[in-house]
Image 1 (cartoon, rainbow, N blue to C red):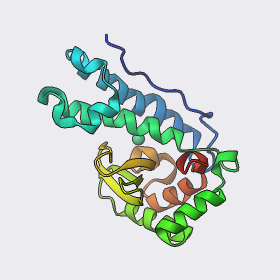
Image 2: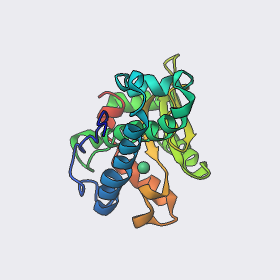
Image 3: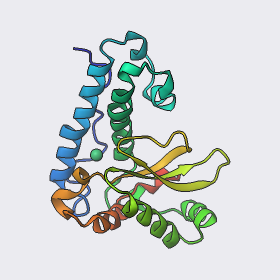
Image 4: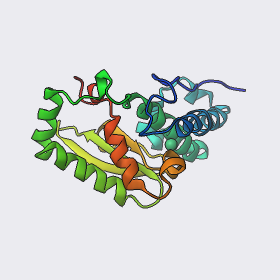
Length: 201
Ligand code: MN3
């Protein structure tokens, strides 16, 4: 079996985001859901050697160049692999070095959204308003401005800008602890954002 893409380890322990994101959710999300996307992506690429040495970003950023027979699989499972790999990186344990919003980060959010609270409200409303499964994003557009957007399913926002923050709002990301209370999960997410990573210090 082809093992081209692999599951990246988390940069912290499964219980590191407690009580905001619980250990069981993190474990299942990582070793079952994310591993599932990796396995299905590898399976999809098995018969397409010309795609195997391409970077995932390259495939996802130009899906029209991916053979039609495997395009949906790359979009869904490749997107799932990329999105989750990114998601783990932009989280940090509460009160850790990364989770404090720096002056530089605050200034950047204020410049683009007015107040930090306004950014949070806008991001939360976008995540809450997403019907079904998908992701809420903070992206950097080509003109350098920050913008909030969302994608359905496991689609990436590459066509809109460079993702710098993403929130998984599939039910599997929060259901064990929050059930139908997506708003509470979003509030909890704000406590464990790795701002250093997101806004580069
Ligand atoms: Mn997920």
